[in-house]
Amino acid sequence: MLGVLIIPTGINCEIGGHAGDANPVAKLLASCCDKLIIHPNVVNASDINEMTTNTLYVEGSILDRFLEGEIELEEVKSNKILCVCNKPATHLTLNAVSAARMTLGAHIEILELDTPLEMVATEKDGFATGNIYGFEELIEQVSTYDFDALALHTPIDIPRDVELNYYRNGGLNPMGGVEAKCSKLIANALNLPVAHAPYDDTSQKDEEMYHIFDQEFEPRLAAEAISNCYLHCVLKGLHKAPRIGTGINVKDVDVMVTPPNCIGRPHRACIEHDIPVIAVEENKNHCHDVMPEEFIQVKNYWEVVGVIECLKIGIEPSIVRRPIEKTTIYKSEGEKNDS
Image (tube, rainbow, N blue to C red; front, side, top):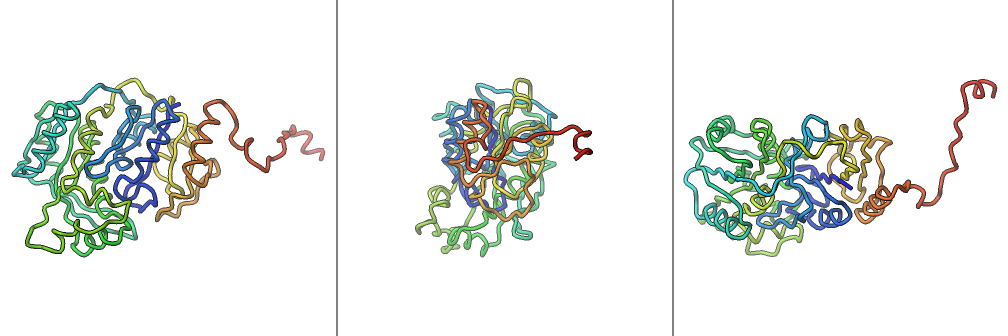
């Protein structure tokens, strides 16, 4: 059983729209799949990443292309990671990379960017997005280096009042949208796994912001409060992230799980390839798309497990529910006309 779990970034999902709070969901679904493909937003939790060994960490735009049948994925034992940061590389980046090398056993090198990567977070119609500057120069600079996966460790410019409100009250993660946009631009150009970790460059002179983490956080945001580096989750994910290659094809995918009412490239690709899509009602978000009739709608992720187990052993999921519809009888065109 090969499953795909998506929780789009920047749409304020009830589960997985905050700071790695979909890790338990990913672990649950991975337990009933041989392999589970996810994208970074599902498991990235600042310096925490609880993905299981049978979980494949795939950047969002690469996942789209995979489901559309444009590319295949190739599993690897490890990747040579290049971690890029704006000048100068600080002790936070250096220590995070050294810690990952020592604990993960990963091959990681650091590159200071000649042109800073600038990311400005914005919000539009209730969705997180943003603008990116310097990514073309980044792509040109890294193209001369030998690496398999790219980690980005740079600041995100967020309006101060928006950032304070997010940390105090939760809600829409203002960083997620611009991170996804940036990773997509760079991954499409390099054809390599890419993930971004925000770097906190808050000045000590801003006492209110600098000491924001001294308070108790809403549980889904708590991972933000115990780190100001945020890089380890990305390094762990990229360490064994599958590359574009050969081995896993869209035809191997058995099911995709998604929040409701958010219809995009991966959903349309699954419909085109007759891949069952399970939409989870409980994971509410800011989208209001009309779900296709083909989707299997369930209330929560507990029910997702039941549907996956049915699919694994060839049971039509609706048969174990009540009421059960009568058996369909198809009549020939002649019989229809006679009636």
